[in-house]
Image (cartoon, rainbow, N blue to C red):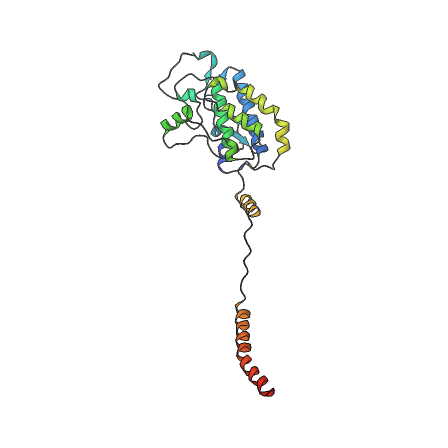
Length: 251
């Protein structure tokens, strides 16, 4: 097997090593290309997840681990399985329900990775695997743009479509989602590294302080205040003396 000097995509996500929308896009465009090729050869991976995506030091992404992959020609639409094969965090709703996989199943798993890369969060999380499987089948996810407003509308639409519960509403296969990602390449490249994956907290705090500037507080100079009070007291005490002198002179 080929030795890939680098790490896996999950490590880059967890350690926040993907610094921009553009960098994340380049990696996932490669992932969609690899999935598209597998589908064109009649193979469904059935276990697409970032742990199975190796990223070389040069930024080349390669999909690995076809251990539970299925050949399209061996899959019957009437299949029903009591055992679930796949990774709970990335599994498609149909696989979670024991139904046969399709190329759209790999698309869903890629959609989960797209969501994770550009928001830093998984769309569904739970400590119990069965609860997690149910969430994939029934629960709605939070809009990616709510978590990261830097995500452009056209990328949000791709993520949302890839994560549709019904396979027929998703991109049908890897080629379709690759073509969609490729069509926005020019727009994504214009964004470059300007937009951060996770909004910087210090930037947010600075923005808040600019919008709502705090009132300036003046620090009291206590020595000056005390001396001023003493001066007032002394002047006030001399007033009767000067009045006495004035009236004495004018008698």
